[in-house]
Image 1: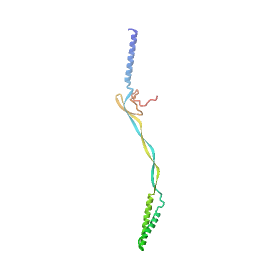
Image 2: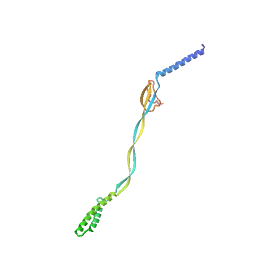
Image 3: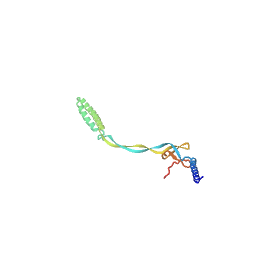
Image 4: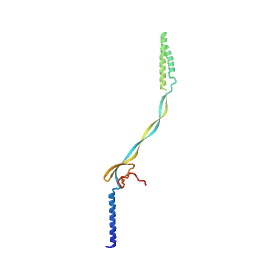
Length: 179
C-alpha cells in the first residue's frame, strides 16, 4: 500500500466516524423543535366609554301671565251677562242676565285656559349620553404542538409560527431570547 492510500483511508475513517457521532448525538439529544399543530388567538373585549351629544328640538309651554284666568272669566261674564239681558222680561230678564254672566264667566275661563295650554315655544337643547365602544385585543395564543410523538397545549404571548424551540432538557422554550 502506498502512503497516499493509507492517508485517504484514515481520512475516510475519520469522516465516517465524525458523521456517525453527529447523527448519534442528534438522535440522543432529541429534536430541537416541537411541531406546531394549531394556533388559536385568545381575544379580550375592551369596552371604552364615549359621550355622544346631539341637538334636540324641545317644545315648552310659555309662561302663564294670568294663572287663574281672571281676564277670561271677567270678559266671559260681561259678554254672557249682556247676552242674557237680551232674553225675557221682568224677573226672567234678571235671572237670564245672572245665568248668562255665570255661564259666560265659566266659558271665558275655559277658553283662556285652553289658549294658555296651546301657547308654546320651541327651543333647541343639547342632550348627551354615554355609549360603550367595544374592541377586541389579542392577549395571547393557545398553541397545540407535538413533541416526541406526544400532543400538548400551551398558552404563549406570541404566535410561534411552524415550530417551537426545545432546550437540551427537552422542554419548550416559550420566551424569545433578546438579541
